[in-house]
Length: 286
Image (cartoon, rainbow, N blue to C red; front, side, top):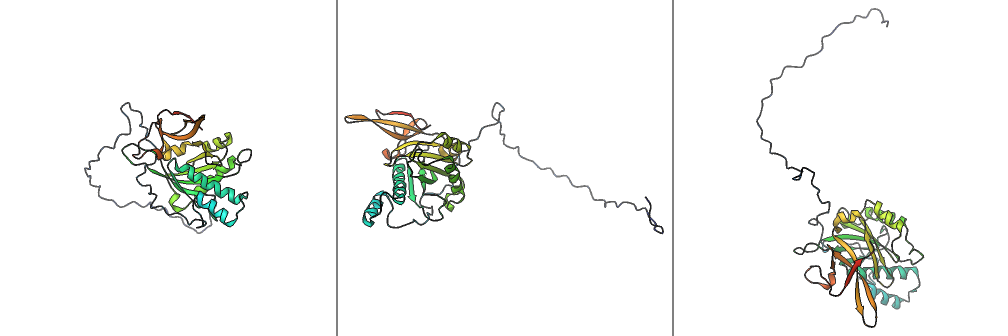
């Protein structure tokens, strides 16, 4: 390589860092870390179920304003429709009636739901809480629930896997009290879940479930995904109870089970699971 003439190059010694006194040694006792290994040496399995100590109570939750003050349950809505001459065959009447019917039917299982559907509701029709069973010595913890209703009764109840994706979007746009952990999303329709619905639920990273509820309020199916179990439904199941009727076939009723035993919140006062006498419990919607 050629350099321009007249330039002198000077060799420079590299800079040396200043000498520093050697650091003093301190004797510090570090306590041993807690072991995460079991007695056999294998890692322990810790439950991923969300604790309920930080979950807000139903009295501290702030609900959005209702879409109207003219009605707040099924009975008041039927009276309102009769008073105003509302067309009972319209989609507005059918949808609102179904929402109130679902809220009333789920109350038997420990749900406390309010109708909130309106503008900018992100598809949420009902908001509320669910008192799921816990140990006999403690009160049932509350899961916060956001719910979408599909009142259509077509060949498949008008429900498809895309509605599961819509329910996922409802988590993002939910009111402040229904965000974070301890929240469950439910999709409710008149027909049982198809294979596509089940697969979509299984793939979702959100805690969600599906409920089949007839137009007259008969609960026929209730399923949820693994994420819902992690949020507080572990140990909870669904069954069918058969009761004898006078001069007719046995009456079928969907109930909850807690650790294999029937759990019917509206038939008890102390929070303990009950064992209905003479009833048969079989798996349902699983």
